[in-house]
Length: 231
Length: 231
Image (cartoon, rainbow over the protein chains, first blue to last red):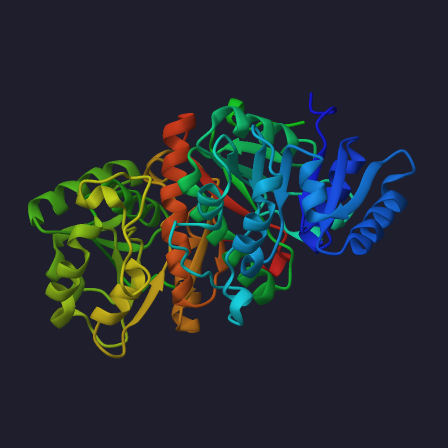
């Protein structure tokens, strides 16, 4: 259903963005990796082509150019660059675009711990995005809890993706995208304000990873089958 | 290992406390249900005896008396009564006791939504407890994400219990208690400060329950087997 809409992954040379780009490339999606440095973006795209095969529709370019070329925009950047990147991208974001925010306001981004989050005035990084995007652009929070190590490994991931947005149709688009990653069950998590909880869960999972030396994820149990969307 | 230590469940006539009392009674533990009203506590104990069988070591009494009779104290009260109850209990809490806090600061407790939490100055209800208990008493955060419906149903629950405390040996005692509930895997979640995330997860799960009409729980994936303690 999404094959015609390219996905731009802004900050896509970091491990989280790279992993999402890899998985969606493997699923046949058209993916543009964005980076401050177009050469780094192209190098990352080349690496993904080596793993996903020569037919992978993957390219790399500078963030603003990547943004102009797509209307599915994924933010996978450290929180300290979050607001600045959105301000830079704003003139390039097309009306009707969907901004998919995977950013977590880890205290590590200001020199603190990765097991703690910063308080964001708007409630969450995703809600900060909602304040910074142009009118007519929907923000969807997702993928915060799906660790880079899982994405960059082979095989299915053992993790659910909870998707939160105030725009139900944008949420549905992102849930469909999520289910293209093998192993993912996508769950409608309701309004964007719930993103604050998803963002904090990441800090918990990072703490569990450090304490127990693992690559943790979450699964939600006890919902009726229709609540779990799978690819 | 715990058979000699009675467990007092303060606010144990509510659905969460009742469910924990039921499960631990069924596991052979000695349980005292505490309530503001000793008659209500005794009635709840009687109901549990009917379900757990006549050999169940379950009784009911007023909260302060229940507290005096045990050194494993479980708080399962609405947040609006949390600080007041702890202040009332303080003189009755024995040195060396463990306070197990399952309280969630839901906005519902002040007339708001059960899908939102209040900001607690100390960071979480459990950290508020840590400030209110006598010196030498350890606070452990646990059971927030294990819904009352699951506890009060028959059969194993499909939910992990993440346990957070600044006292590692108290955390271990509570993890052992948690694994007496069939289906539970107990996970050391590190320091008490992480309770703020556990408490928020409950609001997320309540939101999912409303949206999808289920009784949700969480499972943590991807940790090594030793991280999951089972009964």
